[in-house]
Length: 203
Ligand code: CDP
Image (cartoon, rainbow, N blue to C red; front, side, top):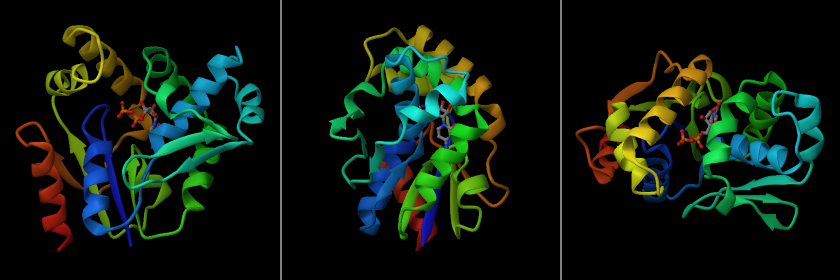
């Protein structure tokens, strides 16, 4: 069984997916972390983030470890996870995610993982696992999302909101909900409320 949980930036996908996966006793995978890892390695190498030919050679040692408590991304023996949510990775990641060659690489990593699992991102229900029997799509207003992310970042809410709105715009192509996805407005719900809503639909 595969459950897909897609949604816009900072809609709570990772926390919700982790909670749903733990309740089901299966792993969850965060596809965004792989796009973030490509971006980080590209920035560290001084590569042009719009050139797949400069990025693909950096990826041979990259591996996603789908732990239920939180995914980790490794580059050979180096754990990249702590560096994947910086502002500079946030700013560059949509450029990298627009490259078909990089999307293919990420998709191949994800499809190689054994089911059952919960997969979260932008195009899990549309592109990577189109036959998944259970699909969800999380939304919330930009202000609500910015307020949530401000609890994780030392930045002010209007600046975070502007950056999120810009990233939504850049991610539009790959962010449409699957026609058979259930859309959940997480604005009025707590984290546990969103997890419980999904678990009720799965029962
Ligand atoms: O939670 P947040 O949206 O901040 O980040 P994320 O899920 O880690 O995704 C980071 C970026 O990766 C997004 O802004 C997209 O550019 C890209 N992404 C994508 O294109 N497709 C996915 N399935 C997942 C992420």
